[in-house]
Image (tube, rainbow, N blue to C red; front, side, top):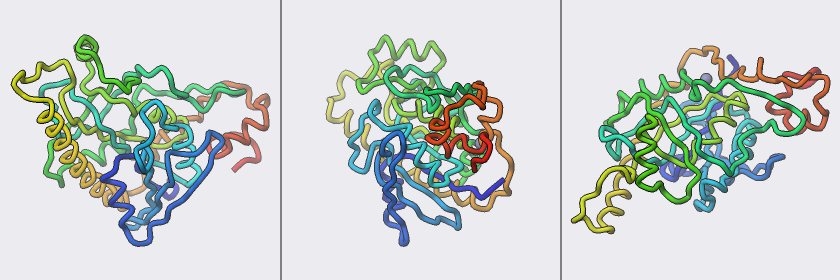
Length: 297
Ligand SMILES: [Zn+2]
């Protein structure tokens, strides 16, 4: 396996860890799918090349439907990323997933409907395998790194991704529980699909910040105390996720290179006769598909 560059897509706590590191470079980059959410920070951490991209922008200006998911994944690929650790706030749909815990998700349900969810919509049909949407190798590294942090880390969980930005009704929240979902969030899709299309290993650390609306609330609690509690859980989970990612980077930096099938996801996935794919499409998608076309890197 070639040299691995790790990208981190996530929230503010983790970004600060990077931004304050001496020698961090800030890279402005453009893609055929527009500009990513913001400048990408680049640093060497424990000897490993790392990139950091704030999903919602450096000023949190993009709501979940507006995040430029395609530009984000394309830009990371262009900068040499081979694997992605993502974080995302969620609601908990299970009593045992306590707000402030962390979850290394293993399944996804897609309820989004207003987002560009593929790179392959123009002159090229490709169908990637997505039965297991997260990289098993990265999941294992995260779970093993979890031993070093002082927070409950759940192995597995089904994340249902909704369009938002409004939260679920109570009936929807109860329905999601009946579907077998454990967490609800708004950002893991199409990000995980695009990462697989770009042959990037991808894993998600979910940060449950509250119980979703299925759970009856204490009628005595006022709205402000609820908000204060959510923010406190968010801070606790962000600190724990930052520590988890730092420990995972340390492990990845010294891990023996092993082949990962995510990084060959397109090998059997391109269905269009390769001799009929228009040259401008190959050109546009070159960082993603170039190696499957003659004469391309
Ligand atoms: Zn992988």
